[in-house]
Image (cartoon, rainbow, N blue to C red; front, side):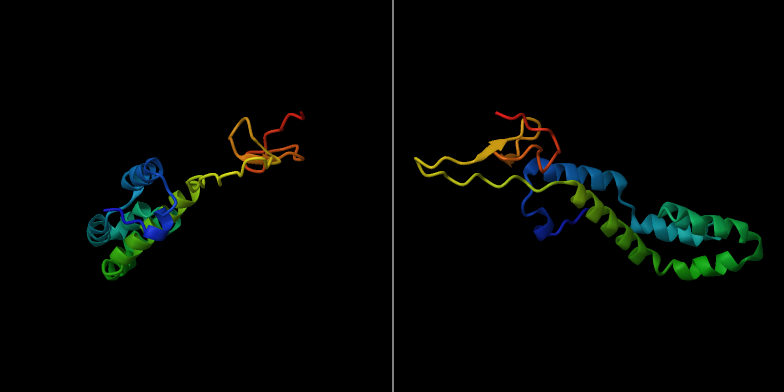
Length: 144
């Protein structure tokens, strides 16, 4: 289950929310799987590979013959739900940062007032008339 905070999704369109949910459902990790990996395959660091901590996973593989990773992984079973939630939160923050907020509705212009802004031909963002490049996408604006 993906939970996004209302403040994070307040300015998003339905399409942006759907994109966020699709990405999160494809990439988020499950707490139960993390606990089971730590319990049964923790000796080999499978729970660390599951959370993309490959360095720790390799360290567990190197020392698996000593039995120390087995003891540590049994203790880590109890911390795995929190670690998985932390991983999922970092993932949600990353995906949310990749989604730009929905464009604000244009303010009504009083008749007789000419605005000095033109729009970018590439992304449609408003660009001041004196600008040579778009501030959002960097496209060169043709001089008129």
